[in-house]
Amino acid sequence: MKTRLLTAFAVVLFSMGAANSALARDQISIVGSSTVFPFATTVAEKFGQRLKFKTPVIESTGTGGGMKLFCAGVGENHPDITNASRQIKSTEVELCKKNGVNDIVEITVGNDGITFAQSVKAKDVNFTKEQLWRALAKEVEIDGKMVANPYKKWSDIASNLPDTKIEILIAPPTSGTRDAWNALVMEKGCTKKAIELLGKKDKCAEMREDGAAIEAGENDTLIVQKLAANPDAFGFFGFSYLVSNKDKIKAASIEGVQPTLKGIQDYSYPIARPLFFYVKKAHVGVIPGIQEFLNEFTSSKAMGRNGYLTQVGLVPLGDSEMKVVKSNAKNLSTIK
Image (cartoon, rainbow, N blue to C red; front, top):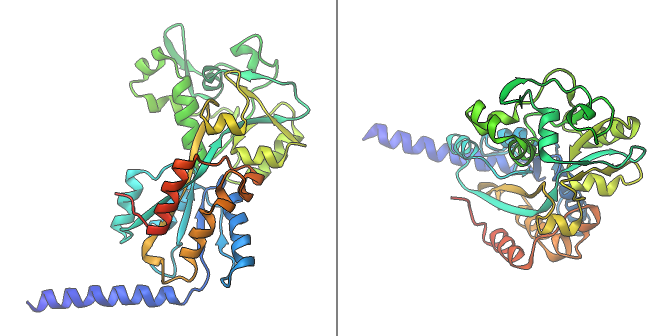
């Protein structure tokens, strides 16, 4: 009986400690996706200007890195919100639970199209998903066999592609954009025979390591600068970086389709995907301003059809989806 009482008392003390610790911080802490970063910072600036709260501090850590920080625990030393360019994984939900982060609110920000970009100085080009898989995969299927990727130039893959060295700036493994690229391009572009030979579809996403695929970190602005300086290079990132840098870069077509607001919204663009952020419900009402920040982010003036986030490249949700998002934010509905 004494042991049970002591255990219960310890839990209460821990909970009180976490809450009191959190009270020591009066500024919202946000981590996560570099793709969602421009939207979150825009909202944070408006939030800081219009309301009585301090402007949130936002770090671009990548989706995977953000999830690790977010799921590490509850209290002042852990972020309140993490941005994500893909949906939270079941393994991340389990990590959160393991560390006491039990109630997580999921907010869908809008839609995005992964842009396969190049310098404005380069010639226009169109790629199929299979061609992109063949350019990036560690092993490719040729004549019914898996072999180490032999392609050095784009024209080695198809004669109508550029006669230039394959050089692609890629996101790191911790990036949600990399995860989405793997699912939407590498796995979709992988041939049926390759999937059969590899045994698992996710093995199609293993990237080559011979210098053709170059990890460029989580700073998408730096990737834009590198593409602008090298007309032979390509790279991929969120649509907003194309919108903000049209004087420097342009998009290659994917399966004959260019990324546009309409094409991304109706998913006719082949690499369209939703964007998210996740909120630690235990911090709402403890860290000042979280509910108000959610209200600002999910307002029509921010993420609606004519909202200010569309000016920085967000592709807005449909009306029915917006209603669900606003309800989730208002009621702090948690994921199951």
